[in-house]
Amino acid sequence: MTVRVQMPRFPKRQGAFVGVHIDPFRAVAFLHVVLFAYWLGTDLGVFITSMGANKADLTGNARERLRKASGRIDMGPRTAMVLMVPVGLTLASNWGLPLGGMALAALWVAAGAWLWLVWMIYLRQGTPWARLLFKVDLGVRVLATLAFMGLGITCLVTGSPVESRWLATKITLFGVLLLLGVLVRILLLMKPPVPPVPGAPFVPAPFWNPLRLTVFAIWGLVLVMAFLGVTKPF
Image 1 (cartoon, rainbow, N blue to C red):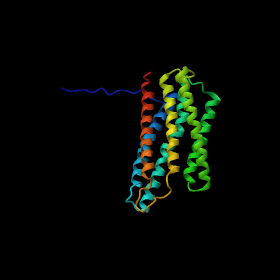
Image 2: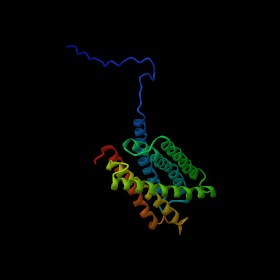
Image 3: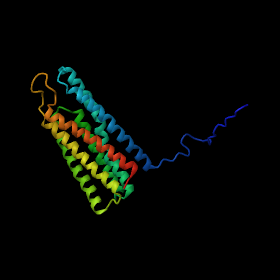
Image 4: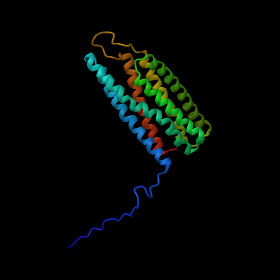
């Protein structure tokens, strides 16, 4: 018995990009997914290398190498977080958020300036310029925290300008996430600059334990926000 397999036929295309149509909204949604993946994935790498760098039995050279590796990896979640602001609000504009035209373009420009600020802090670390930019970045994060939490809570209470409660909840949670990020930076500023005694961990337990719990909370919020965006349960 002979079995014949009918191969599927695909329409002939005259050019490489002929007939290809990409919805801009779906392209932004794809970027949204990529940012979530890089945020969680690289942040896990930061956490693991930070745990290694905080071990008390490390030599100074080994600790410094791990800290530098952690700093490089950390630029992944830092970049993703900043880009999530214009990407998320662009998507929200298709769900009732009155943001478009020049306002949306200005938002992307502002996010680009913020991203430049974040990268300059990393590239110029240890300099007075970087310390100044760090304070500016912290102020931007505080303002963004208040803006997102204020918008989200307003939408949840009044149903306007965003009626979808899942989206209003997601906006609020993003504000909480920004708040936790501010808390992480404050904890790092408060810790002693060097180990108090030889062989001690780089970050003492009174700072490391709340820092670790804050990172876990950030991961949980990112997962909840991704769940809300995919399922839209209410």
